[in-house]
Image 1 (cartoon, rainbow, N blue to C red):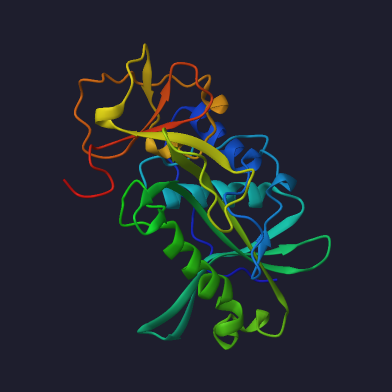
Image 2 (cartoon, rainbow, N blue to C red; image 1 turned 90 degrees about the horizontal axis):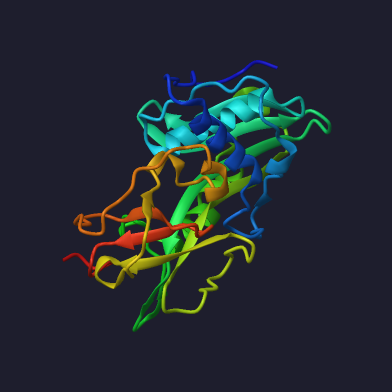
Length: 273
């Protein structure tokens, strides 16, 4: 089968523990989102680490880094064939209708799979209008992401079948999602239970800077490692953060030996100051 639109992986020299932690997090982290009517979660636990851990490029956006990591796992797997990634569906040379994150084949069944990938982080905020779930960048929003995922991204092979590469147009395509990440509850609030959030998802806590309790040790989790559960970072040295340092954007940290991550947000989050 020919291969379409497989972009070269961007690599750079970095500590091997960082790459291993990110790859391992993909395999072991629970889904952030439950099975949806439109698509079930991809069985990521069927993938394994490659014998040689390549050096990921940590100088790119987190979403692109996460795509590179999944591509490495798929290309190393004897169970799947990676046919395409970032496959654009175009009406014409000026109009892109959408993009399939990954197109893969299950080699045991022959099933063609469209796989949508994302790593997302949301903070539960109680408002007069009910629960809000903004991201660290408050312009992001769980409910908007979920709606777009269900009505557009997961529907692309059905909505625009005629714009798929010719070899795949007459094949049935199974759509699955791989949405990982973490839901952060406000430190004084009960755990939020928004629709379609997996009950087994990773959880953390968030504080505004002015509410942060006094503590002995706060270590910064660099953004490229946000997806990795803290137990996978044991061999990675982390920068210590001083509570006197002003917070102008959301900061993910480990507090003392807490196994769950914490977000420290600017005072007034999610409203602009």
